[in-house]
Every structure is written in structure tokens, then in C-alpha cells.
Image (cartoon, rainbow, N blue to C red; front, side):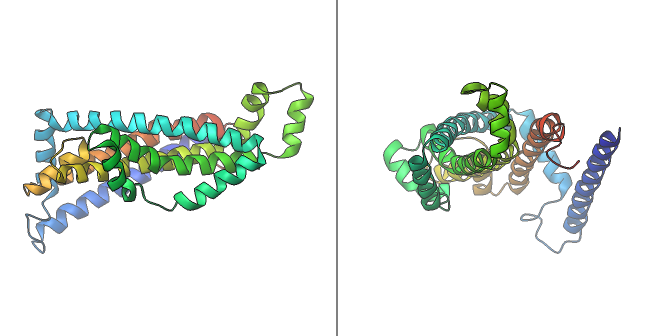
Length: 263
């Protein structure tokens, strides 16, 4: 009961905050301090957003972006699981993984885009590669730290209960490391969006087409600024939906239920 009340209060506070930002946006635009072309009213943005959704282009671009992000993020998760597992069973591979992370983790995904274009061209494969590169490092980092942070006593207790191999990983290591793993997934999801939009904008400059990033680039090129803001709003809305309906629900049903974090 208490957790439900806290959840309602949290949602209400966040909703009021967002409403306050939107009202401030509309009031600031109506002051005339900024050129309407560069800082349109919220009402103009909503009208443009409704038009783009109605003609189907915006939703098609969104589906294309989510498709590429799904593939890139899925490949990153598989790669991270393999790397973290090998690092867990072999100290030598663990040192290699930490060295690679120290070298490549600070490198933005967009920085390798020129090489990716040379290797894979300017098609969807290049965008997927950039998404994979951008999202894999927080996944490996958090999985590696999470698995290493499981107390030895907890592992020994699991072994005393007869857990070995896959059973030990599934019933002891993964639950113990899950807070770190979920954090890695949240960061990787955000980085995947950033990489997708950035890469599509670059491909837009080279004449290609794509998802929401290309949509924003095209609208900016034709100075349709309300549509640019509309594309950005869609990205924010999708992020909020995934956070509340996916990550937060998983956290409530696992980490909070297990008492591994405060409400």
C-alpha cells in the first residue's frame, strides 16, 4: 500500500514538472523574445506533430529507428553476456576485457562512424554497428562489476544447496548482479538512441534515408522547426514509455521485491 502511494506521488510530481515545463515553453514563445521560426510555440509544435503522425511519415521513421536499435542493442547484449561470462571464469580474459573497456569505452560511437562508413557503406548495417559499439560498453562494465560484486559467502551458500554451473548462475549470480545489469541496460538503451539519431543525421547529410534522426535532419534542412521539435518530443516520449513500462516495472518486480534497494 505504501509503495503504491509512493508510486502515485512520484508519477504526480513528475507529471506536474513536465506540465510546468510545457507551460513555460508556451509562455516564453509568446513573449516574442525569440524568432518564431527558431523557437515556435508549443501549440504549433503539437499541430505539426499531429500532421506528421496523421500522414504516417513520423511513425514509419520511428518504426525504422526502433528496428535498428532493437538489432544493435540485441547484438550488444549477446556480446556483453559472452564477454562478462568469459571474464568471470578466466582472470586473463578479465584483464583483457578491462583493458579493452579502458581504451574504447571513452570513445563516442559517432567517432568511429567514418571508419564504419568505409567498411560497411551508408546503409542500415552502419547504423547498427554504431549502435552496437555505443551500447556494448556500459553493458559489459555493469555486468562485469555486478558479477564480481556477488559476495563469496552467497556463492558458497548456493553451492551448499547443490547449485552448480547454469543453476548457480541463474539462481545466485544473476539475482545478485541484477541491479548492475539493469543499470547497464538503461544506459545502453539511452546510448543506442543517441547513436541512432546521430548516425542517421550524418547519413542524411550524405543523401541517405533512415529513421527519426534522418526525419529531424530533413525537417531542419527545410527549416520546418516545429516538426524538428516534434521529432524530439517523440524520442522523449518513447524514452519515458520504455522507462516506466519496461525498466521500472522490472525493477519493482525484481530488485525492490527482493529488498535490494529502497522504495
